[in-house]
Length: 320
Image 1 (tube, rainbow, N blue to C red):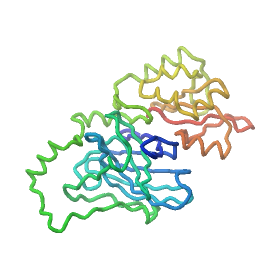
Image 2: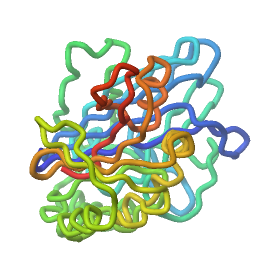
Image 3: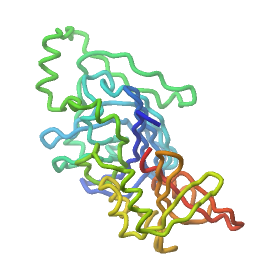
Image 4: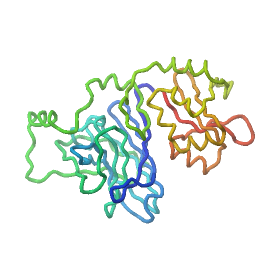
C-alpha cells in the first residue's frame, strides 16, 4: 500500500545486563501520522506479570523511554495493540523516527528489549533507564474495541504546581533535546517501507532501483510460476544470493526460520505479485506448529503449491 511503512522487530529478555533468549516480536505499521504497534510475547515469564511498554532512544548511555501502554502476561504469553502518533508519541514532542527501539519493564525489574536502529552501545539495566517527561498534552488515538481494557495507554499527569510552558520555551527545548527531531526529508522518506530489523539500519530509507534488481534476479536464476492464473512469477535462489537483494534485507540470512527451511530444501524463493509487490519465501509444509514458528520469525503468509501434501512457501513481503 502506497504511503505505508511496516516492519517486524524481535524482542529479547535481559538479565544481569546480558541479552537472553528471543521472547517474541513486535509489528509496527505507519500510515501518515498514525501508527500502531502489535506486541506478541511467548515464554517470557512462567507466571502472571504486567509490563509497561515504551519506545526508547539512547542518551549519554541512558535508555530514555517514552510511555505507550501496558501489556499483561499470563503463563508467559501476552499480546497487545498500541496506537501512537508519529509526530508526538505519548504526549511528548518526540517523533517516532528519532526512536531506536522498544523496551518493556515488568515486575521485579524484568526487562525485554528490541533495538532496530544503530547507535552507541547501551547497558540494559534499570539503573540506566529513565522516562521521558511530557512537554505538553496531545490528543492520542483511541484504542480499538477489540483491544483488551487492560492494555490501554499510559498517561502521566504533570505535577499540580507545574506551570504551562510558553511556546518559545517549547521551541527552544525542541532544538536542544537529545532526542532528535524528525528527519528534514521525512516527506521523501515516507515513500519507502521500513525494513525489518535485527541489524543496525544505517540506510533505513535507501534509494535503489528495485525493478532492475528484480530483472537481474530473473536473468540469473531459475524461474517458475507459482500460480499461473495469478501470474505469480518466482525465482529460486540460494542462501548466498540474498546479497543480490538490497542491503536492507541482508540480515535475513541470519533468520533462524529461513535457515531451517533452506537447509531442508536447499533453496529459497523470491517472487512478485502484481505490479509492485515482492516477497521472499521459505519452502515448507503447512502445519499448525510450523505456522506459529513462521509468524514468530516474520513469515506470516503461506502460498501453497497445487499438491496434496500441503507443500508451499512461507512468505514475507519485502517491497510494496
